[in-house]
Image (cartoon, rainbow, N blue to C red; front, side):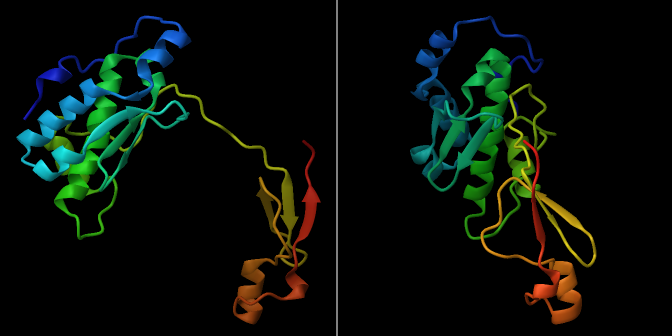
Length: 195
């Protein structure tokens, strides 16, 4: 079953608009996208979810294209998608709606977020073969690792963004000798890396 609002599967470049125009237009609840979701859920006869579903723009999203929250039925979309294309917005809404459909159909089971149930929901929503991740040019955040910890016995190194609170030991060495309990012999040496 393919739905009419996904007319153009190819991804075209959206017209350039000012950041102020985009933010003003895209803050909060989106009535049009919510209505589309309501229509699709009605066709799938998921009437309880029809009453709960809502789509909103989340200006705090960075690298994530969208998120779905079940059982509340909330779908959040990254406003930066509008700068890519309308087709990308629609694809993301359907991707997230598929999560809600999968969980609504199997409320008392633990299912994988992109498992068989989600894939079936994608087919029912007209997006067969949908991938779990996107390859969009959304900015990603990389954190610099500032701390290195060295084991005095096995000489393994562990780099971390944040400093450990308290003392820590090499788990592999502790596991071999003390069954995984802390032992001072394997206490990691802390080194602040240059920033």
